[in-house]
Image 1: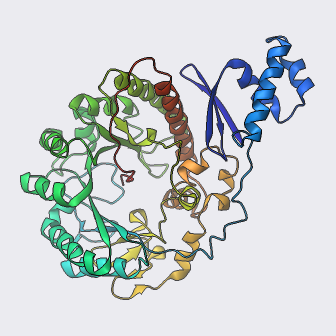
Image 2 (image 1 turned 45 degrees about the horizontal axis):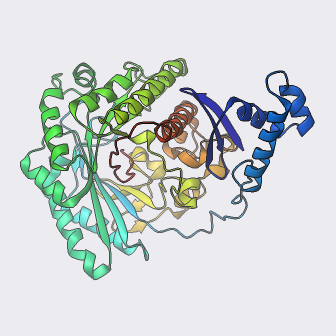
Image 3 (image 1 turned 180 degrees about the vertical axis):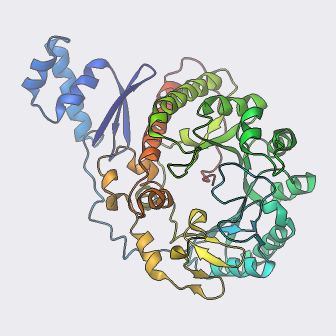
Length: 466
């Protein structure tokens, strides 16, 4: 499969199966578009009005050489060779809902101010301890394990967070495991003690901020309606600096009501942050904040605007990393991750404050996806098996999509939310993902093509901001 597009003055050709990217001139771009459905003479006949015949034939020869080298028009070598149902998986990551409560009242929050369609609750040390034991016991030979402290707002249960980190560390040596702890916080309760502890123990922190003051205060107020920007931004700036501008994300959400999100990402950079993410809200179609199909043209323009600013600031020595523009064209994730994504329901589970397991945080509260609990283990292996089969080959919409190996088939929770099944795809989300991938590849081409020395900005590990 070949994907061709033009962006920011570049003619880009992606060979989907091999992952090879080619930046070509107009002639090669036009020849590649005709190559599969026409023989050499037909290609020459169709293009000779625009180009010299000798140049066309030379371009055809070059394309044939790339095809022979496995860099153009390559075939899928994995289809029908991987039995996902028989593939043995181990649990390697947990999302601990350490607090089903929050001190903010974000207007678009899918978790209903941290309650997740249920009751307010705090995870006890005993439940969290048993969750870590479960992870150790069900991780097989895998040594590196991930635990994200999530909410609600996890700093509302800070003492238990610290106790669980201490417990996890106490078991590492005896079990030959290494815990990588992460934290997602709205920042209200951050203080020097929190920063010091996180800088010692947390591999990554996600700091929630929706951008400019007027946007953030509208979308992320306290329950009394007062905005949170002035309280959290100074703390976030200090936190990022204390981590040497590494191993964190400032993470925002944009909605139908604030589609000019490129300005919010640029605002992050103006504040001095270098690691950032901005995610589209996922909401029911009748929700006023939901992204609509008619919003897509503006959203595409925003990504183009952001990509150009990304390049400009890198060249000026004021670069930043944007999560969705960080792709590895030389290696990338293993084949299983490229085909089946985050591993929700199999390799990755969420744990509620009372110890129930769900496939991921977005399924919490939906009893149809209750898998078991930390005391009895997984009781609904049939649900886990269904998630094991969630991959790009199981989704009809992925078959002809050039982005399938970058998004790995998309989010199962979003598929279920909009189609009632986990093996479909959230169409609006797919459109945005394709655009982000196009921008990311164009950025690689532009920075490689630069005549000036381009600033290197250290990229954090690819931890998905929830």
